[in-house]
Image 1 (tube, helix red, strand yellow):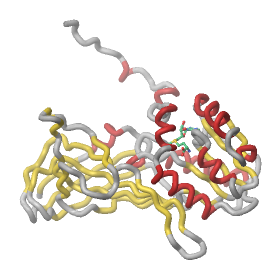
Image 2 (cartoon, rainbow, N blue to C red; image 1 turned 90 degrees about the horizontal axis):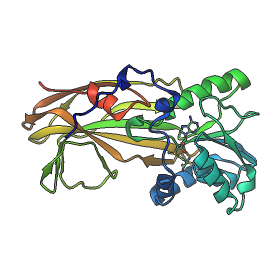
Image 3 (cartoon, protein in one colour; image 1 turned 120 degrees about the vertical axis):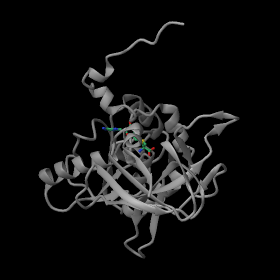
Amino acid sequence: MSPLKKTNRTTTPPTEEDCYLGQFIPLQYHHHMLMDDYRMNSFKAAINEAVFPGAKVLDLGGGTGVLSWFAAAKADKVWYVELNPDLIREARRLLKMNLGGEKIELVHADAFKYLPPEPIDVVICEMLHPAMLCEKQINVIKSFKERYLKRFGGVLPRFIPEAVLMAVQPLQQNHRFTGFHAPIIQFQLPGGIHEGTLDLAPPQLYSSIDYTQTISEELCWEGVFNLELAGQVNALRFITKNILSISTKDNSVIEWQNHYLVLPLAEPLQASAGNLLSIKFNYLAGGSLAHLQNTISAILK
Ligand SMILES: C[S@@+](CC[C@H](N)C(=O)[O-])C[C@H]1O[C@@H](n2cnc3c(N)ncnc32)[C@H](O)[C@@H]1O
């Protein structure tokens, strides 16, 4: 067996490509996103609620173009912005097959740099990853708002999503896979019952971000859980609920949840019901999963 080669990766400054790593979602995964009815119907309803006849819309991170196309049902004009050339080609192919596609201008650009040529009414941005990691939703919206106000002044457009709520919950998580012990990162469908998972305490909110207000990439939290059940605390579940739109007519809310992110703890803790569990973490939105995982501290008090 040949020894593992050491690389100098950690000492090499990150390239532009490294910075975007995790955002280049392969084409087949975009096709999978089209097949996700929960995601598609939630966004379609929110866009239908927020976009009015004659509106001007910007879609940051347009992918296959589906959200731009939902907007084009009512809007006069949609600017679709995408960095990945594979996706531009795919959006061009698909939008030709869908009535209304001609109202969408495909722009090959970086959402961190692009501004539309005139003020707009609605911004759609779906760069949403559990716990706001990996994809650059918060970073892109923060940058967009600063540049937009500088260029156009006045009022900000409406955002889809409007806000995000994030919560954390201690778990006893089964880390055996057909007998094989592997404490790995897992993703779970939101809601419902998860076989092999014991919720040891109810979730606690650790961040709520309203995109129209001042936003920060720094997500730090410190809190104490009163454990309701005895068990081995060996993982934390991160819950990410996106408030896609709040109806201006009846205040009803259209939301969409990302998959739950379940991160294993470095050191599992054996706990009794009634124990107090102190949790701390501190990460940057858009950072890697490991970045959050490495900052987690879990202590039984
Ligand atoms: C989660 S996908 C959503 C795609 C599409 N809006 C949808 O809902 O199906 C995020 C998209 O953002 C694009 N993206 C990521 N970073 C970007 C950037 N800096 N500028 C432009 N597009 C970007 C990715 O290539 C990807 O297509």
